[in-house]
Length: 152
Image (cartoon, rainbow, N blue to C red; front, side, top):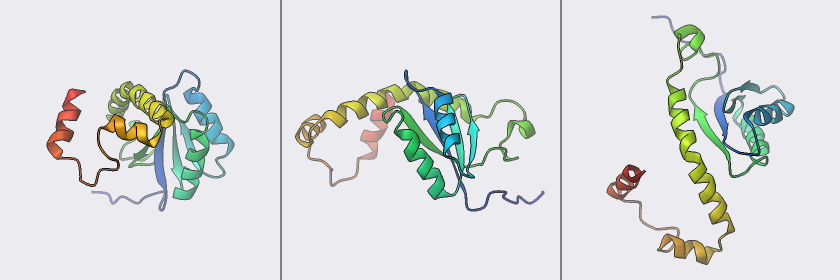
């Protein structure tokens, strides 16, 4: 087996997704290109991928979130763009992760709604909505978490 030699040592790659009636994936990619300064940007159908030093990537993400704070989502990616272990040019066909992205994008409108609603609430209203004191000192019981996930 051929040894893997990483091309971008010391970098991180993040997906930036947008699901907004006001901001398009092209808007996200264009805004990222404008301040890239040596960071690799790959435009995608859902936003962009950003590869660079952790500090530069976070700087760009902070800038992008200002465009539409409730509808821009960020997710780690384990491989940089073009990595032979995951690239369609080397493997052929669609990358399996994109089906997961499609599913996740169907859920983000609920997250956006929750973020907007809780942002408008006072701490007392948040406590009342949660039905208990926040933050809770105990970890969430795994059975409760599983039942919440199954409800979706």
